[in-house]
Image (tube, rainbow, N blue to C red; front, side, top):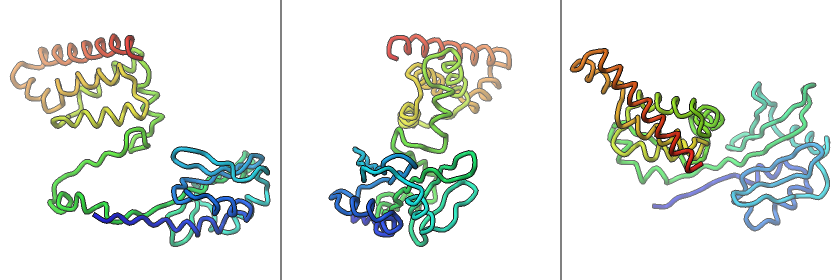
Length: 241
């Protein structure tokens, strides 16, 4: 399978101040560049996956910010802009008076050829769940996950246990789902609580149990699963966190 990556990096370099562009052009691994950060009063910085590079010893000035903003289209209500006919995105940080005091220029890349590996699945018409790299931002913000199920508190374990009780896990899908949640900030205890409660119960499962055992016994069974899963998670978290 041939994979082709295009990034139009030159288009991004052209909007940067000349002193910063010159330093970037000299970097041998510039094709691995993730973003360039220009914060007023700080040195300009290039960020790569494994390192950060100071592009100039002189601090970013108002003229540098103005140079970039004058080279792109205006910012929208979300303080984001772009470069025409590319995937590059520029985010602005403003102070309380609305003045731009920082810019983050992110490199956008188009990757061609990767769909070939799952082309037969896509064309089959069946439902497909695609999971990203653990630890990267997904549909649910990482901050939410850290706030709700981070650490090893009673609330975090109970919440994870209740969510797991109502979620439906297909066989073995709980493993990559938990891996992604833990990479986004989920604690070890809540992870175990979710892992125990998820396969034990689900909403369809409860409806079937209710039709056989009745409402009262079903509620008792659900409560036991939630409490025992949360308790097991807390004990596990005490020894692993």
